Image (cartoon, rainbow, N blue to C red):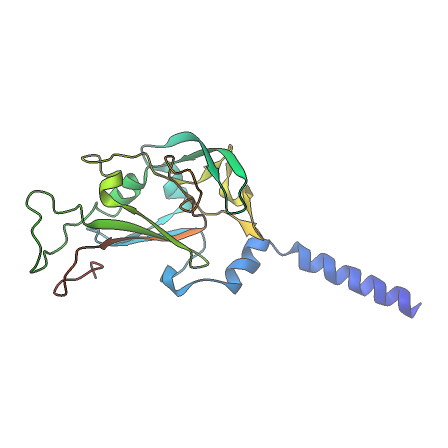
Length: 207
């Protein structure tokens, strides 16, 4: 009887443990300080933007320029991923923060009529993974690449898109021209516009 009771107790304990959503367990264990003031399913947008803000998942879903792309990339395990990804353009998300801000010039620097081309956009994941795209890559006046902040994959929300021990919520970066998936960063917690200009006399992060 004691063995049966012990087995039952172990079974119930396992059931309780597996009942905890894996995303919650993952978030509690590994929220990177690079996320800033972290809130689940909320993305901070800051740096060289005119009005730093936060974007909720609901806001992301209702932004203009919702785009669906069919993409393929090679993942970290060498497998080819095929997906349909839906979300607003990254440029549109920056517009929600008042648009990109012109950085101050450094003493060594001349930009003429092109003050934004030294900027880049860093995206931070909950676990601290980071990737970037250049401002000119997504700027409609330059590359105008359709880089997305996708909230939906294969017709399902990112909460239902498995990744490692958790899921991809709230959103995933989609860079359709990339062959490898290193920039297909998911679980985005922060989007920050930074300045890559060389010199020692000017702010690099817009703070």
